[in-house]
Image (cartoon, rainbow, N blue to C red; front, side, top):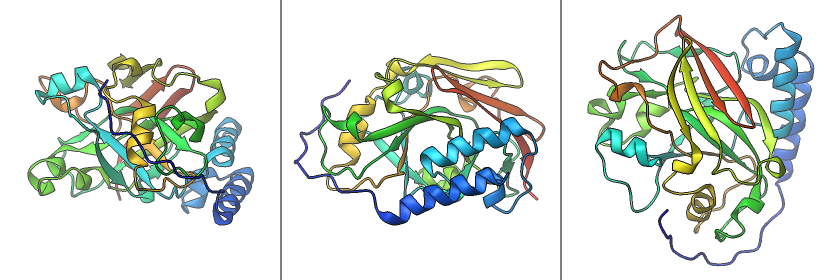
Amino acid sequence: SHALPSPVPFPPTAMPAPWSALVRSLASAAGNGGGLQHLAGRPAASAVAQRQQHRRFAALAGLEAPPAIYCIGLNYKKHAAETGMPEPRFPIFFFKPPTTVIGPADAIAIPSVCHPEEVDYEAELAVIIGRAAKNVSEDEALDYVSGYTVANDVSARRWQGKKGGGQWCRSKVFDTFCPLGPRVVPASEIPDPNNLGISCTLNGEVLQQSSTKDMIFSVRQLIAFLSQGTTLLPGTVILTGTPEGVGFTRKPPIYLKPGDSVTVAIEGIGELTNPVVAAE
């Protein structure tokens, strides 16, 4: 991995009261049978197991509206190689808005502005910040993590290229393009987030199969880098990049389409499965 600049020490601050209230409200809503779908005004899943997943998910993270969703691009060595791009010297990052977040079993809805052959899957490890972090060192970075979950950084490739104006954000910000779940595993249960198997399966076919060992910048390095001069608030989510095997690099390319089912799995956390539909 690459060496990054040393941070400037900064005292941690307490979790803001509004976020504590948000976590409680999410847990209450999930307990009433809704979870993420209920809070978004959509019909709730009826299965008891689904409600239990949402309840734990909301109570531990409050991810219906995280203060920020940082996403890291080109952070796996083999993924960089498959795209033909050089490994970056510093982390490449972009943002997703909270409106992209959905939970397990919620539908990824492809909007009409997306071309039928462009919406791609990206299996990712998501890091959840537990207390305010600013100018933290690599050595102490994991102390600021409350837990980990599974993410799918759904991406509209044409908006990432020709339509994107030279930047990636537009391709990543469509509603429902950030599935998270099925649960949040406390950081204490994952001592080394850079030693986990990660995969993506589309309609029963494994398309991505790798390990977080292949990251160019480790989770520690990412937190230290992103926190330089910038406060990462409690509840901030960091998507840490995707391994090789994404759809647009395949010959022929493979993209998500209505009727598909996509599952991202990470060792020690679980499986995140979402159906794909056309947005209404």
